[in-house]
Length: 182
Image 1 (cartoon, rainbow, N blue to C red):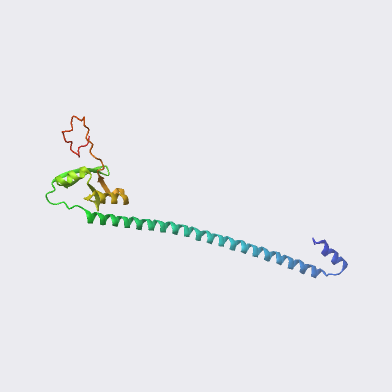
Image 2 (image 1 turned 60 degrees about the vertical axis):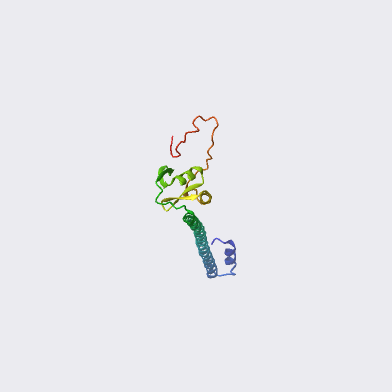
């Protein structure tokens, strides 16, 4: 026996040997139960913590996914607006549009057929070229600017350059083709 108080009581005859053993057994049972309860609490706490962390992670992923979906929906709406602007305001080109106007888009030379008046308007910056569903259409400058505000990639060409004439230019009388690349 490791408890000196129990030994003194046993020597004095106040308690019997069976009572001391029973007290020790009860004490051991309580210790065991406390260990099991603490293990269960530790396991329960760990599982609760894991469940909570998993829920937080899922909520974070859901928020990110929702942001992506909202962004995609917003981009789709903008694209629909741009398509509507182009289809409503495109300048019709008829059969007599036989002049080829070359321009650069995505590092490739593209072409559009226009008439002389439309070509001059493109050069002067009154018309722009916008892309819709793989084809190119002529649109007024104001519409091209609206499209450019929504998505710069959809407007292929807006000529903002004002043609400055130098008074001392000896070649001022000679017209340089606008699609001539040096």
